[in-house]
Length: 68
Image (cartoon, rainbow, N blue to C red; front, side, top):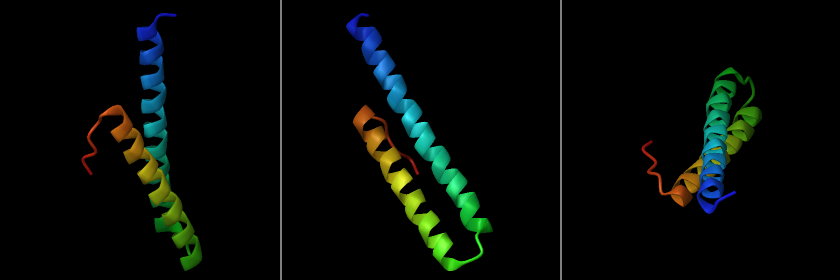
């Protein structure tokens, strides 16, 4: 496999990881709305913030701009 194919494959993997992190954030926000107790809301919020941080970090690594 050539260097360019490997680089494209690696970039695609990283972009998919960013999408996964953002999907986790969205699902966590839905869960926060439906959560009953405050402890559960705080735990879900912490997980959403970590996923958002990971998504931002991945975007910076790829040279993409976060606009949110």
